Amino acid sequence: MTDDLPMSTRREMTFENGTAIGTSQRWEGGQYCAIITRNGIVGCGIYDLETAAEFGQAIAVAKGTPANPLLEPEDLFNAKIVGATPKAAKMGIEVGTTGREAVEKMLQG
Image (cartoon, rainbow, N blue to C red; front, side, top):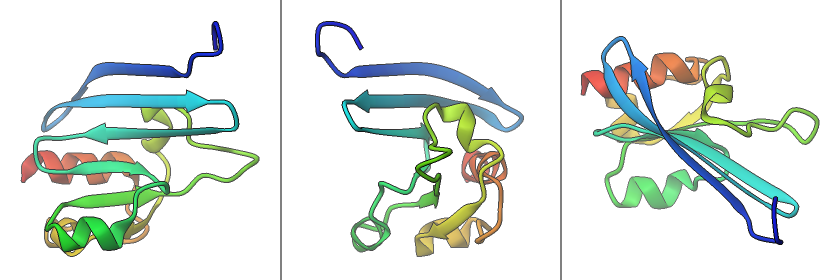
């Protein structure tokens, strides 16, 4: 990080079923990343599924560890989904699905 500012990146990502936006945010002592599709988000464990479900959103989360954090959106590709909102589950996203598989299912709608 430069000049004590947090770092934020955004980029288009191409998948078999379409295009999504990958984001990464980092600050002193923390970080999160996500892949945002037109139908929902596949992100790291910072997302609160209960609140997202209350608003009817499709969110699926994977969880890193302090030793192996999820820093960049590509880190979500092989990470296993540990939770999903009911709307994401209706898309076929289950616990154990990889992040890449979850994104592809979201892109299918």
